[in-house]
Image (cartoon, rainbow, N blue to C red; front, side, top):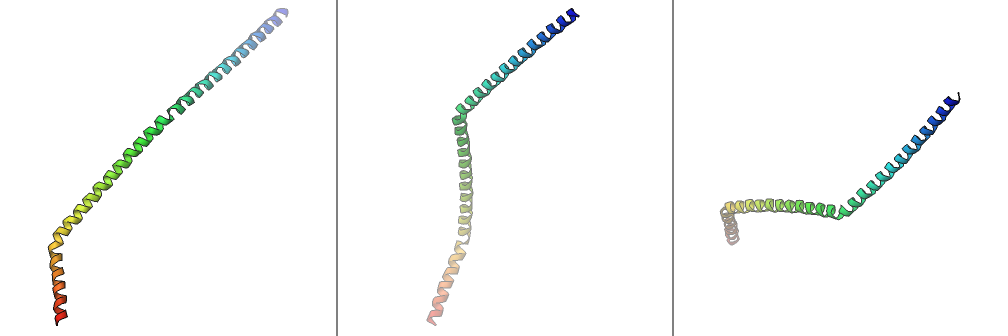
Length: 109
């Protein structure tokens, strides 16, 4: 029985050592993970101005493209209106002259 008790005490001691080692390893891993997380956060904070500048550049590019597209559409519409005005210019002038001459003719009567 004495040997069995010695074996049990030795096993308990070994188990206690294993638990303590596992706890220390766990704490070490947690601390290492926290350090790594802090490093990643610091790297991210350092890159924020670069990320912000990239975002602004892309936004500026999209805005420039939108403005260019709007200008292109405006120019197309302006060209269409000018073409329509040129097509109808002669008829408008004739109608204007008729109206002008018609009113003068009725004013003399």
